[in-house]
Image (cartoon, rainbow, N blue to C red; front, side, top):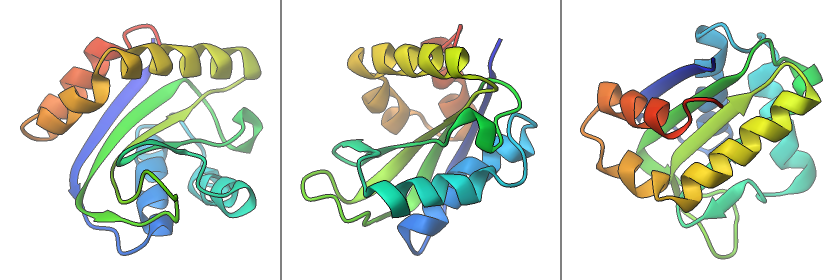
Length: 145
């Protein structure tokens, strides 16, 4: 069973702040180690804004060995969107963060999130009225993440 968390109305001045906030929620939930937020920022610094998957949505993650303690998935809705430097999908207002303890869980969690996203998860998260609803929508979308 995945650890699921959500944050709403998060203030972030930069994409780095947004990524750190999204990943820090996984740390606070006990699913990731203290170094995970920094590792997630490095992913974007090293590879560019490929984590911005669609209009306004970023998928925050790092390799399992960089701090994944358990399977964790979190939704973070920003108070105001931030620019990641993506040519088509900026600005970002919604971040999905995930962590896993090993490569197999990483692939499985990613596949579960992909299915949920293709099934309209982004719209349901944006429509959720507050943190509790955000978390409920995410739990329903990825029950076996």
